[in-house]
Image 1 (tube, rainbow, N blue to C red):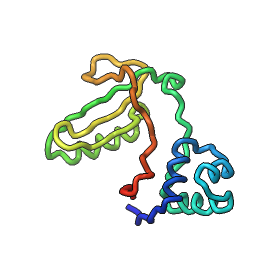
Image 2 (image 1 turned 90 degrees about the vertical axis):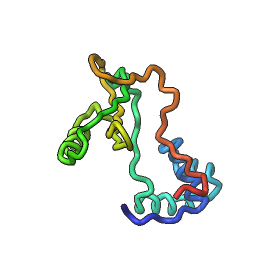
Image 3 (image 1 turned 45 degrees about the vertical axis):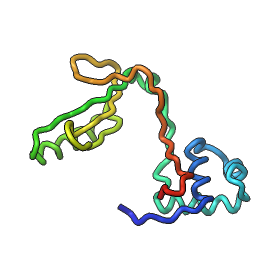
Image 4 (image 1 turned 135 degrees about the horizontal axis):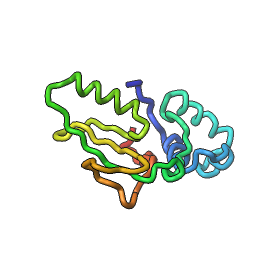
Length: 145
């Protein structure tokens, strides 16, 4: 893990606003954060260079990508089989339908979020209504690093 930089209140405000609208112009961002446009450019550049801002993406609605179903999948592996776990991690990374993959405590070992056109004959939890789905972190809290 890279060394972490300290975030001041302006950095936190910038990150909060960029999570809501990454396409905001520097002028709009500066106004929303409460600083001048030239003063806004420096921290944004620093946050990008330090890896605090890891990337910029546009997130299409899954249905437009033909992925009408979201499934929460639990995977239990044989205990003490590091080779199987490593193989599964590689397979999950390579599988386009797997949107998120987590190693979790207890049983099962893995929790996945999978988006597919259809699901059948799997033990899954199918998302009927994504009540909350966001990429935004509560960056304004002082306890956040």
